[in-house]
Image: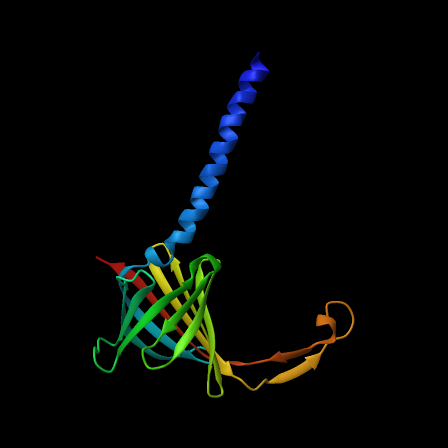
Amino acid sequence: MKNSVWLRSCRVAIPAALLSLCAAAAHAQETFPRAWVGQWQGTLTTWGVPDSVRNRIPISLTIAREDTGSAYTWRTVFNADTVRGLRPYRLIVRDAARGQYATDEGNGVVLEETWVAGTLVSVFQVGERILESRYTLRGDTLVHDLMWWNAKPLTQTKGQGPNAERGATVSSFRVEGRQQAVMTRTP
């Protein structure tokens, strides 16, 4: 008798637990970019190598859902300058289920973005410089990290033996700089 009661409770508890996990996973998918909508303010810091601060300026970001539902405004203002410091970008939802987005800079430039493990990442090249951009939300703090390096490899080597990338050429690059904006949500 006790076993049959326990078995019945397991039949009810296990599907409920699975539903709860599925709901949590679905909610996690919905948090970006919806959970990022709002006003953000903070400081943008730029460093040169090895750790010299080049500048610190105020930054604000406004993220809002557009009426179409397939894009978000992504309006950044640097140094409180709404003319020269304004970047009126749009985040385009290409395929949210696959983590595929794009940033339309409104000037013909569209950067492909990937949502992976809680971070929006893009890697792009401008002339001889490669840049990696990462946006991550940590509680009520939105962090944007930007790193850049020269597209020409510093070194190219080939490994031998175990763990040697199967003899493939390994190119190594030296990072030239970093920029980080740390912003908090404002009411």
